[in-house]
Image 1 (cartoon, rainbow, N blue to C red):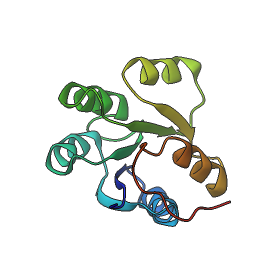
Image 2: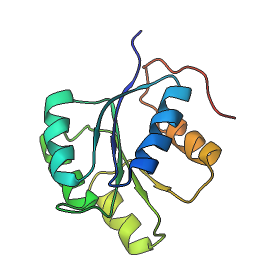
Image 3: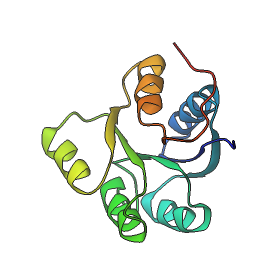
Length: 131
């Protein structure tokens, strides 16, 4: 069975690099990276990743708008939202817009990895893991 393909979307390269290492440690592969919502929607159309990890606050188009466009393209898309905010209104908007989960970026890497793995697409291979 092939690796889970993941799109990582964040305007900070350091966060994209951290997420890439978590995805690879979990046995997935980063198919593409975007630094804003406009690029994310375009890359989603091209790559159809199994899982998208997307920041909320980004330039040009925020993650919630990108999430809504991705869900319009594929209502079954698996999108996890990432943010440093812990606003219940933002969480509610993300979940109502189709996000499957919400992960705080200021969590330690092992906690983020556990939350990502808990949302890993069913039926797809998963490898190693940070514990």
